[in-house]
Length: 143
Image 1 (cartoon, rainbow, N blue to C red):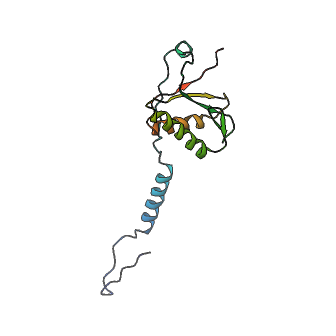
Image 2 (cartoon, rainbow, N blue to C red; image 1 turned 180 degrees about the vertical axis):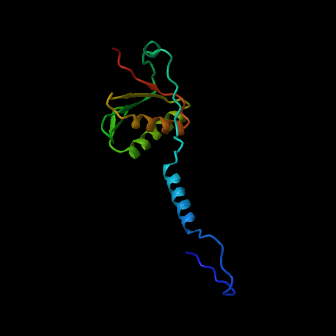
Image 3 (cartoon, helix red, strand yellow; image 1 turned 135 degrees about the vertical axis):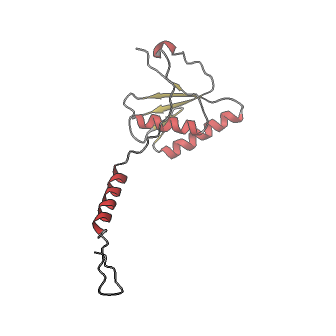
């Protein structure tokens, strides 16, 4: 309880006790902060209109082939396998830089295991978008 010292004993305090009100306000504040919805971040992906009918044969001479495996930390780059994202990222950056130094636009082809986690696909797309690479082709298996 908050006590106010009065200058004379004859004056009685008519101020209400604010302790309980402050406790309730702080509890509500903490509750609202913990239950507030966070706006999710999204990565825009343009999907083809008709799927398989838009698929094209692979006829690119200078391309970078990326393979996504089902295992968590396993990546493929032009036939080489990497077990660490950071090492894979460095190797991919070097390949892209090498093609760009020859004034060629990197053609990136993504192939993956159907059991590969969506997290890996989004991580790769986000990284490509960060490098300002706007196009990547996804390899499909004809059925």
